[in-house]
Image (cartoon, rainbow, N blue to C red):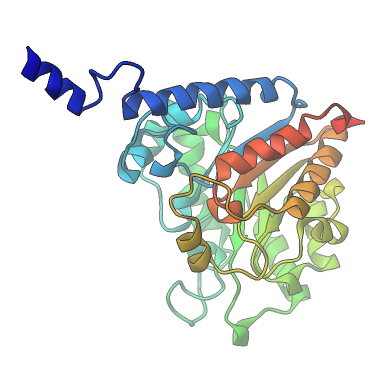
Length: 332
């Protein structure tokens, strides 16, 4: 028995008052949920906070009750993700890189509560002016038929209950192929006009030169949202809202990606394993809360999606933003 006790002590099970690592994670998650639920009860209706994707092992104790691999979380993590009181939407980034198999969409749906909306990124193969990995012109650029075939159709077929706004992220074109803002707006208008009307869409620019009056007018005419992003080469979100007012669309979309002027690779290495805030931005937080308040005051649902590279840990950035938005003056 003495040997057995010593063996248990080796793994922490026989040490009174010392929790096992798994128990510590569960206890921390329980505290996180309790704090988040108290904030969520004070939030205005119509706000949806979520992360760009969900497969991060560093979120153990923040979102997940155990340590798991990125692959395990990618497959099964949405079930626990959706239990977090402040995580009420999620981004599905993988569709940007290729079609999502129907079985994977079905598996996601099995893990989500009824009506939980997901914001999927449209395929790069349709949104990039140049072919991915190539500088040649992309023949499928803004071709609605391919977008509908690869994404909108499958989502409506097996994932309709969870289909939130589609994010139409337009990566920067090669410098030699940068489109004229007026011609770009005309082409975007033709693309949007051909899409199914029952879906919602939000256009995300990564080139500030395209943020023109013509672009604003196209979005307004089509009832499509502009994504107020926090990104490397774009103006701050509040500056974008001067060019494309919240009134342009019946809902609002905000995406926090990277502090302007920083690069993805640098931020990733600096912020791993994404379990803490490393680079808080009070200015960005104030702008996001201001935009959200304005949209919610006018009855517009508001989606706020956050990448780990914005501040270091997207669930903790969400909690900070939610605390600000939950203040009593939020909708005055």
